[in-house]
Image 1 (tube, one colour):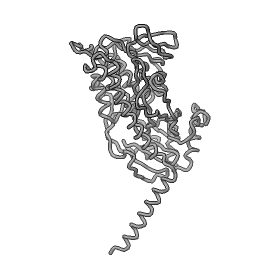
Image 2 (cartoon, helix red, strand yellow):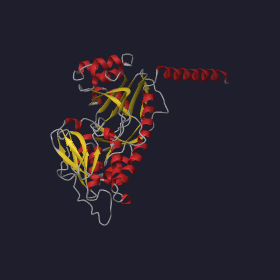
Image 3 (cartoon, helix red, strand yellow):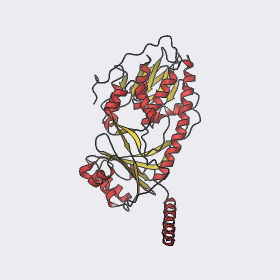
Image 4 (cartoon, helix red, strand yellow):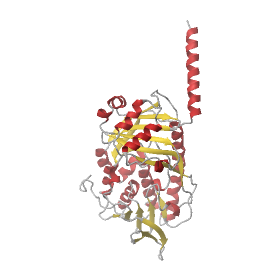
Length: 413
């Protein structure tokens, strides 16, 4: 964990004569996600009073379970805007990696819908980045153990937040950053989340050079993607010198609840190997080599909204605002970009005293980006888990092309 003395808490900048919508007002953020923490840091740098209400405790082990892969310079800009760029650079790994695409028998494939060329990634442990952001905030900014229940209007035109423990809080602006199953999302839009048809099973594979040496040596720093009509396997390095293993399956939505007890590693491994029984054994060995801690979750997607409903001073960011069934990209990295754009809109002098104008500007860009991200995610999902007829057709055409090429070669002198 990063010590609190490591991340210097710089004093807020003087607003001077500049005017922006939140000057002298209070902001409440529901959810201590990366996006919520980054937004709080950006706003506090401008002298805005911010409180974060988080349902979980500060010591919840879920904060420290995974590696975050950031592949967009725009997300890095958010950390630099929060004046955390140098610390982030020292804590992360920067590398270029390819995506190696194979079929279930280990044969190499190509697909224009999948980004196989070398891409620059920043990798950092999720808990480390969370601590970096958390320790940069003013003391007492995060109130732990506050599970949001409802939002009501107050007599002074502010918003009142009610929590399960009986606590209440008032704010001039409320921002939902509480993740995919956001309790604030219904206040902005009536469109719920839909099941994408794919469930993701995740595990970690530490010490790959000892457990799966041949695959570790072959992959080096690259990412492996194995595809089949109804299943896909993704293996990539993490910041802990191990590998993250993900298996995507086309199954009913309740499959992960009724299929197996995921707390029993023997059952989990047996079920996954049964689903992938026709795969090359070297891929099944990855499941045996993984840590005995498996988690499964359905991949959800949000309907593409053109705009959100009329409401008070409230908006959303990150997974609370939009969901896409991402497999090759980390959706949490998008929260940082949302935080940067929302902070810029709320502190822009051109919006003067109008919070509504600032939110409209932010949401217009957010919803347009959500449509693009959803389209890209669906394209990658269809490429990694294609229908059997699509794969068969592609292979048959490749077979015909090879036959014609061989025949033409015999005719040449």
